[in-house]
Length: 551
Image (cartoon, rainbow, N blue to C red):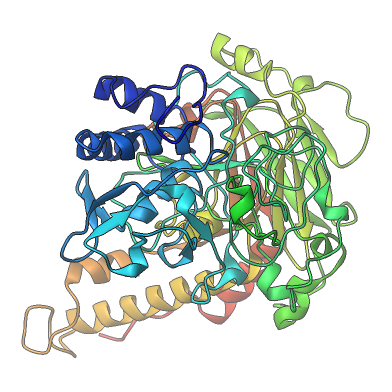
């Protein structure tokens, strides 16, 4: 029983315990997003600062271990000169850092609003700052363009047993790259978790069948444990059958709604309001962005918002097949390319052996005389696999039907996560439903890269011919090495924009022993034909290998 007269959860530490025990307990309640090492250092720093303020430390422990179900007082630290806290070489606003760790992994710095009873809220400009995550609520940020957000995530640092199915799914969704924190990792694995956002204000976890209504932006959400089939994160309800949230006034704002999540636990202190899912990849500091199941607006399923937003990108008729899927084991392709007719907007890639239609690719039926034990074992865990769905003119959504996470390479998710193209691996948790490809964005990237390559090649040729000042002269152009890199962009580089890669069960990148997807036991490569069609147009109008500047 603490000084406020209520009991904390059984087994929870108290301020009298060793810092190590307290940190360990609080780490068990984090929601991912950050790497384990970053979260641990941030929590250790906070616990040490509070060790001499035992009442506040007890309040922190109570708030976190009860998920805000019990009232708690302010938990304060000294305000710094610039208001930011430095942890592990990265700076961020303290209340945002801890809210991300324990509540909303995809939180942006301008999305927090303190509750009325918080006496030392960050916005009050006191000498001390309250970092109790349950003294703040999440609000829609007017400065964030929710039109393109579609990542979800949460991550748990160094991943342990990759075969641990859905059990590893973090309860909350995470979005990527926050505005207030510097990201300095290698190839992050961004994790996307199944969650459902609901107009539910208590922090209690929703029961498996709870429905929720998603809106157009990101805000606090209740996140039930991933269950069976939700539109993106794991919840049993197929949220796409829910009516669109009233706050959605146009399709663009909602085109990328995604995950959101964590239960708002101060039930009596929060208004019941519809929360939003933000499809944002959660950056897991070290390498993997994770995505959980999240709720998608229902109208997405039955409207061509993506098309109407800006008209068709090409007047060419749709290709006969909207995608083709190649299956690989390590670095070798197994079986023939599987083509999906444009008449079938959905395709399932699973580990079974009995294909029943033209939109189901059963990997279990494929034989390989050179199959390794590693691939054999991983194939047993593909199960229901994944479902790919084309929407509008060519946007693609992915749903993880398997009991195990899948790992995706997606330039769209990279961009949403604030990462360079090809710089991140995205972990999609069971039941997660997420947008992984945006045709309009891809088309713009094609045009930009093609134009950049052409301009750089022309400038490089002109410099060599002596027509313009060299890179080291006064008024010179960019360094030659930059020009060479830009001029070196080729068709293969542009084709990569039109391809998705996905590994079943096993991840790759800095968080894993495998550095490349070609080292994973079983993976697929998806070629998107409408995007390739547009690329063909771009190459015809802006030939990358076209005439160079005359000498």
